Length: 100
Image (cartoon, rainbow, N blue to C red):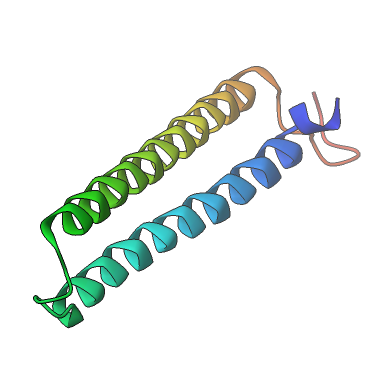
């Protein structure tokens, strides 16, 4: 149950932030790749069916990555709320010898 300590929650939050950043980076790379492929495509070889399929797949990828980013954000917010609640309930340990 160590993940429910303040330190454990903070570690999980930082891990989620790193994953959210990685998903955001994938989203940016997918978008940049799509722009680059579209810009370099030879109009004579790039038929409308292939272009439509490419756009549809890219839209699906973008939607999935956006959903993942939102899920990470919600999880991080929940952990932040848990940390605030934990801070309100669990008193900070007093130094040895301090009066209670």
